[in-house]
Length: 126
View 1 (cartoon, one colour):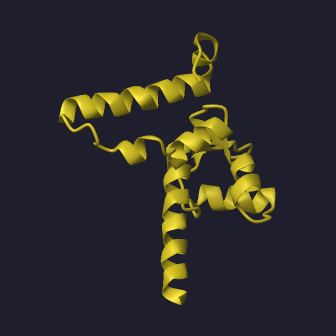
View 2 (view 1 turned 90 degrees about the vertical axis):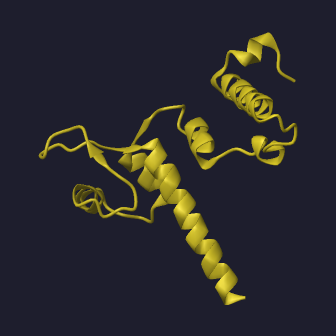
């Protein structure tokens, strides 16, 4: 149940925005059932935003710890410099002291495409 107190939290605001978006869409289209099933589902982007504290850019080391196999820091920075990952890496540091960040939306689309490929492979094996 949404109260005034928890509506001010980031998650409360996000939930309020999702409900508002669904209501506005139904109002504009005139269809009371428009996107009703999907409005309650959270997107990968929304889940990642909550996981990483609503930050737009995530340090590559944290992303690697969560989503990549064991990889050394040197190898991680080399691959990031060559853009060898399926998502963009932005260097906000220097060449001698790199600090790579991953845009949240790029990570979300990479995870979605990886999931889609995996589902296709799984269906092909059955």
